Image 1 (cartoon, rainbow, N blue to C red):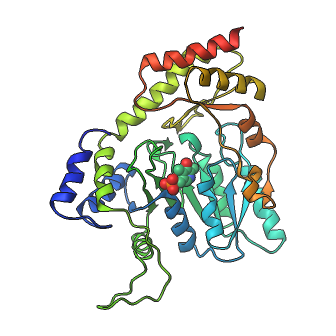
Image 2: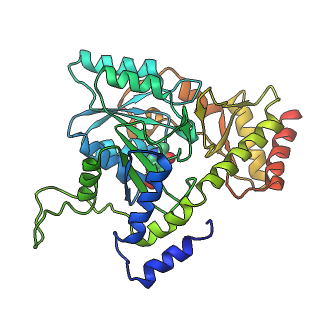
Image 3: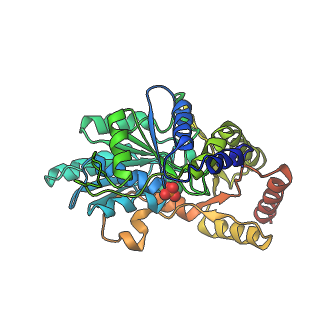
Length: 363
Ligand SMILES: *Cc1c(COP(=O)(O)O)cnc(C)c1O
């Protein structure tokens, strides 16, 4: 926590705004809108997953539709597709950003069109905070007139050509889950340039109650709005987002400085115009075996590290889904490792990690 979270939570208690609406909700939304730049509307919700679900629903995704989704991601990017009875079509990554490959995206779209089935939406992800190739992906989406949901759950504070991630899709989504760069313990947000779509999202997120004195409903709704208590945490967190990004980037730079010269370790550098919040510091090792050797050596020192996300097209639950893959994300999964990346790590912590890795690689 940054410092002022408790005072905003206390304010919620003192004023008895213990509800999924209130001054903290409004102020948290305002602070995110300001952070993301001009002409942006934000609806804070109970989770990032809820935000993706509402985005898909607002785009009219329904039973039997196809939705293209980056395969290399966390399951929450894809799960909401199935809530609506639609089917995910998984697209592999490219090497430069580890995110959706524009070539494979176009292949997936044209394959759909040839079957007479145009995909309803594209879910592209800024994984680990690294922006996807926004220009290329947007250009293809515009060419085929397919809306983009920009999964920025891991990328608050990242920018592409100096513009904030979260602004590029037809909808952006954010997450404030406990593991993200800032957190409300659990929470998320839907981002849109269209105020009417924000209002519709809030309507759906609060049980789709019609405008009447009694409780009347003409739509199926959800209970997805963020609590005013948790929004108080969010207000405090937004005051330290810049510091958090700085701390994460400094972790990455330190690892890179100490390990980047080793031929056996590969870092994901930022292409020109790409600015990552470096939510997690990740490295690639030459083989699966060496990756596992390092992971186990760290574990022996009571240091947790983790393989990169297992691609969705390899997940048991998504077996049989359409896929346009070329082995890239499978290779990243096999050879990649997320290093300890918390904003509160100090030099000694980082040095401990670095020493174990050096010792393991040099023998
Ligand atoms: C965390 C995450 C989500 C989901 O957010 P929740 O708030 O945990 O529901 C979606 N996509 C990605 C890439 C994530 O990392």
